[in-house]
Image (cartoon, rainbow, N blue to C red; front, top):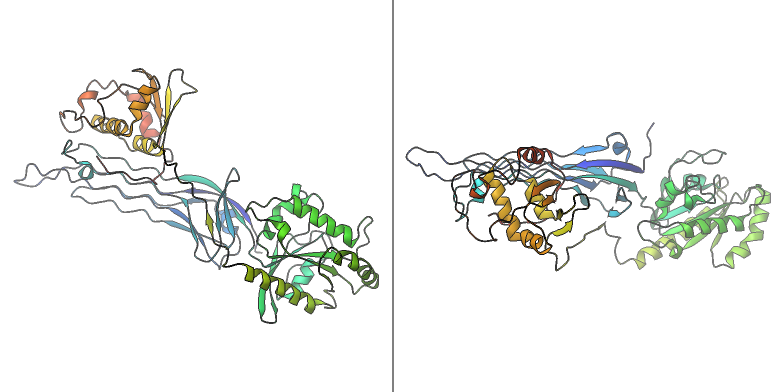
Length: 482
């Protein structure tokens, strides 16, 4: 039996970038061939794609881990590594992407809409790309950047024009079955409907979709019953229809109190998409009027509901009484809503631009190491992860990059003393001020740096730890090599 799953948690892991290659061109009679190491290939992205043929998140319920392929390592003779393949995950129309903290990341609507859930790591530059006037034959290459890894929450918000809401056993599923070709499960016990049922209704020239939201009860907006699980399915509905059971003999309940209770739960519910449910047009359906006592009760409460400005319809799913008038009224409300919308609601993705005065990094006192400092920033953290700490020339190149960015000047401004611990991307260094940014340093040979001849800047344990730590970075920013 197929299952309807409208919420899933996935772990998206993008591919890591391939390492760059440190190679020197060798050819007979050409002793100074120069560097020819190619760049590593970028890692593949994990991409969510809206597919109209997918109607549930069931696949992610059983396969929650998604990993793209890694980029290949560069080779000599200026051969770049192959780029990792993107992994495309098909999701239903109306899928909302949230962080584990509940932060909205994307609202995916419309066939073909794409969202990069995890971005692949950037491939490391080969020594041919790192060559410059000051470093004509680099004896090192950059390592590939690890791909991003994120835990994401996927929630399906049904894309329906009309949402039927009401207490359990009010007859919502029955209305869906007689108004459309859908065949939901119908029984005479509460909470028969455990999943939203969607149907397509034709009213004259108007075609619209209708959704049956599983029964609400008082306190649903606080998590009682099935409320929180399925209230989100009405967020996209243009029209809300209160379905009231007029043949209910439960003490303390009547059609007016039922409508009041439903309105209270809708008012308390806070949609994550920022929509305002209070402005949605309402219709009231007094159902089961084929029962004599129910028909009398419906006639009695109808003036009270209409005095509130609510259109009221007396219907019977069993005898089909009043269904034609109801379908045309819902169609008219949907047409009016569509006319008010200049265009269909676009897919939304959250973009957070950097501040105008953003230097690209921050330096803060280390809360765990007295007298130490922690450097945060996309570029310095990525540079550390891409550095081969077994190669002194690569370490010196990292120091030059940090100096050009202004990290050393900021450390000195905040009172950092030589030898104090500085942590970047989880790796702790004993800071020693290097030469000023832009000042050339004499080169003694490939893979060496005179500033690190005594190997005192970073020990063997730190180098081993640097190779082990490959945490997630970002590939959004760009920079010229050198």
